[in-house]
Image 1 (cartoon, rainbow, N blue to C red):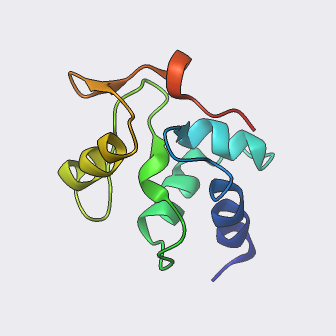
Image 2 (cartoon, one colour):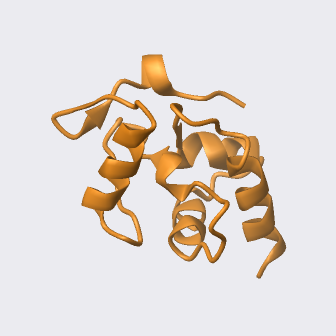
Length: 97
């Protein structure tokens, strides 16, 4: 595993249940503009304790997930994140580092 992915996973662990972050916010917190690299890293996550389902698109769309979007939506709803028409209100649910 790369140093970049380790940093991504470590930072993502700080996002609490009931909150989300975006690929862009996560990348910026890592002092990079490599938003896609963050997404690819999340997709390849081998760790059960890293909540990749809490990373969404900066538009508020749920976005992809290695186990499928339906599973990601289910996990977020279980954590009380409200999703309306496939979107999350980032003003309410966004975690800021």
